[in-house]
Length: 323
Image 1: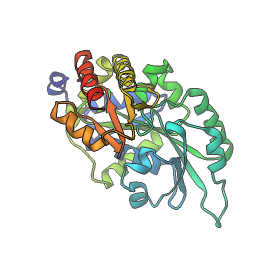
Image 2 (image 1 turned 120 degrees about the horizontal axis):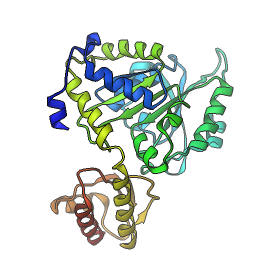
Image 3 (image 1 turned 180 degrees about the horizontal axis):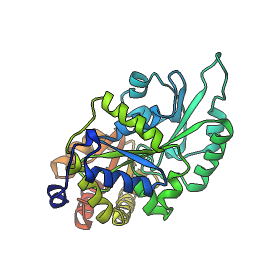
Image 4 (image 1 turned 90 degrees about the horizontal axis):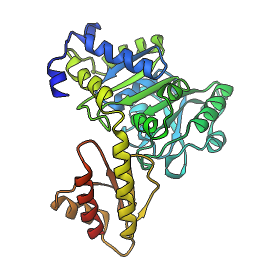
């Protein structure tokens, strides 16, 4: 990947003159069944742009209560887009269209806030890498279209859902008005996400990217990493999923409550009479295993291309002992 980045042909992307960026944007747009895409430095910016394209100031963004767009983007949609937010609750973040139907606010004229856009995260990060299935997404699409509501897909980890289920990326993408995907998580590129939509809306996104200070110059160096990842790191996501499943099984056998493992994220609830999450994290770090926490008794473990079978087994041994 680094060799591909060093050899990348570059130009000035602010002027649309970087051929490697254009290649990446065209390829990802085609994969997701849309007309155009825009390369951004982060997934949070990509989500800001994708949602801004679809919702007017004062309308509401509707999403699951632990979705990244409402929990981990520091209120950006309110701060920069004047967008209000309301949420529904779902087990492990999985989409429940009936719950959305009960929560959505239909157009109410100049009297009440109306739902402008519904955002779905697939796979769901804080839900534990859980997948929302294509049939449920199609039901959501029908609900939204009947109500004149637009749809955004936070697909930072959509590659994982695609590999785990075999559902074509286009089948996911075509259900949504805007889609974001990330290159720097499971695919292993150092930097970068894309927002995908119609050519008209992506042209607006280009303006907003510049306004927000994210116009980049010879960024083909980074885009080349993304192209390499699509060529070499997509199919191998299945390895991460298998390792995460084995890790979950080992920790469940050690007495922890492990959420269902759909993809490459393992969420572990520690026994009430054992050490706290911060204690486990510190002790694991001392033994060379880096993990995260989601709460006083919740651990979050992510498998990725830099952790092989041997490393995963070693991590399982250490964590099982600590638990």
